[in-house]
Length: 235
Image (tube, rainbow, N blue to C red; front, side, top):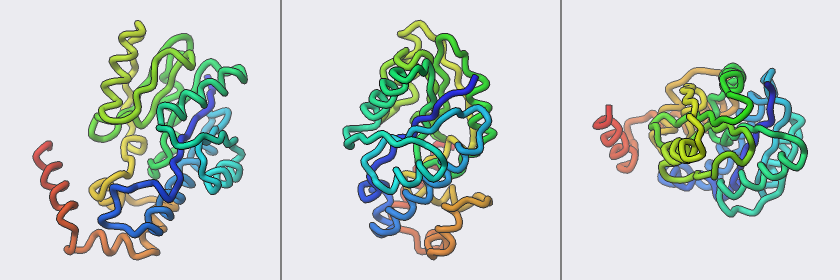
């Protein structure tokens, strides 16, 4: 089975507001851009991805999609779930019965993980979920058919999508993938990213801009320290 991948993207100037305590507005915009570039580059290298559809009202996201041969669907920022509904309708109208959703802020994404997720999906009627590292959010979602469940992106979306699948009479497949699981929303997520090695545009940007050196120094913000303490209690 091969399928299309939908990537919802916020306007870069509105993205990553939870990083405002450690990054300037310009840095947050640049990070959103390079993370999307990393995601699209990985998708362009997949064997089981037949098309890429970026859903956004960000013009720079359109250019990024077109650089890798993807398509762009304009959508005002009404929320991720609404953007995915619009994309699913577009794909259904163009003859697609299945699709995958991946966010634009998982810079460690790689083609092997994506192909593995697609290969494990049941193509007739099914739902495949890839959670974030906290097992709270949905960082990867495959649905067949395109409207098999309602989309529930937001707080605790992983459990909501699992429950929606069961309500629809589908037993969801859960696939954990390290590259998919790390979405960059908070300072602690950014710190986790900086502990990885790899040839990604995001890591190169963080190093070249001086953000990596700043983040890894001892002068972390109080918010960051609080997040580290909260995370340690969960381990």
